[in-house]
Image (cartoon, rainbow, N blue to C red; front, top):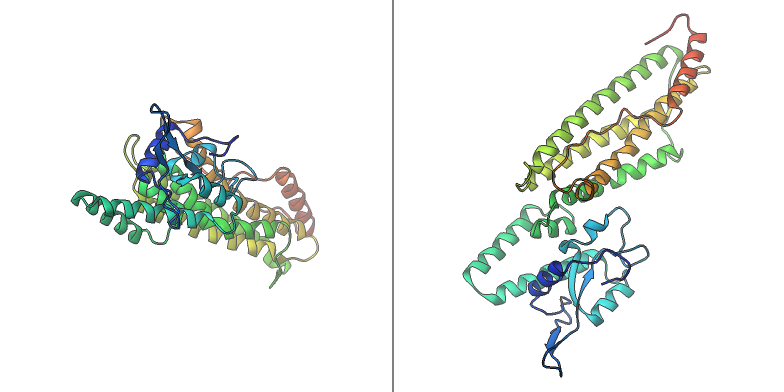
Length: 333
């Protein structure tokens, strides 16, 4: 184990080592990790529970978005001999997380086959069918489904969201920094107000849809004390992704719109609001990961506060509207 980070519990280590049959999970090693000691009251153990995703910053395969609780689950562990543990942690480029997850999966499948009991072979077939059914989900999500540790639904949904929204959130950051080029839409004076109203209307509609999708996700988690519905969670994350894609499209349209003198600030307000909203979508996965730490006895609901605006935005909008009013007689909205 890596010192200074979240340690695996003794229960996790015991279960992990037994699932590995006390053999190193590296397919090119499979060394026995426990044996007799000269002291008849002791055993020699060279096996270690290694973190797949690193336990602390600067460690191999570390991911900052994960919580310590998620890092300490059995799904983030692999049983290795001391030498192989050192090897995979010294060269994370050669030994990425997906490779270690495959090592563990294949190692445990082989152990089940070697047990040879009818029940174990049925279990193996069930796990193989599950991998087929969820073939499109990331490898770590597969591992979470395989073991279903406590609060697996939270970690499973968070991992799926991170995977689905990765490119959208990167694009949102590029929009905020002004790094995305045309084609630009040039609005006339007559178009500006109607266009801004349309952006706001679509924005509100998307927010309402997102909140309904999130309510569906809470239902997919199931009642407290009962396992969630993995397929329903996957389908709901896909719906969330579609909503986020549409919100990103609105944000890009706002970012690339150009207007005549007097209307620029209004258009800029729409761009700031929509791109900021997209960037806030990542708060959902952060929230899901926080549930086991903040509320360990119950599953929580979540309401995405897309309505929240960046600091100073209302004043910016008021200023833009005043400038528009000076261009047109009367107010709007």
